[in-house]
Length: 243
Image (cartoon, rainbow, N blue to C red; front, side):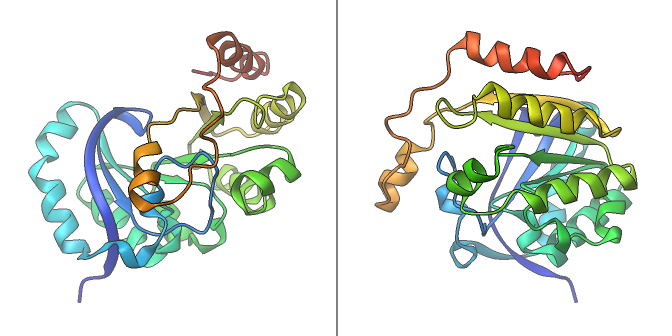
């Protein structure tokens, strides 16, 4: 019997979801409540649509030729994919068996739920490190930083390639000292392919309004380009490819 899970939606994208054009599967449910979250409609698993892995694979197959020709693959994101490890692991395994490049987009907060088997079917982990300051991380996400750093260390030990994703939020994640600490930590991991510094935006504001939920950072501006470049240069100074 095929494994079932709850998904929010799927999309095709090119850019920060992994190399090439990707089939991006958004699963439902997330244990964190990041103040800048752009997808509050993925927070609760019960709001998702119950779906089988067979149904997901049938949808992916429709776009297989397109995404492979474009040097892409399949990315499982959320929400938090590791909140549904059996479903996520089965999707990754089936995609891997089908010869598709696989990527897992995760905060790493639930990294302990990712089995070695799941990770063996993952060609790339997009690891979102929200902050390198413990207190800021807790206030920003409602969770703890340590599980993510432990997961990054484990991925490095297993030789799983990583893209680090860092959302730059003025007044929250732009402190030079915290960025320097993160850059130093990341530079010590051998399996980091790149660091994406992603400017904070308010594109999800309408979703909060539709849900009747206040957007916590409604008064926070997007970072100026000079700030974004300064943070990228901090990562580059440690020998990392930063974009």
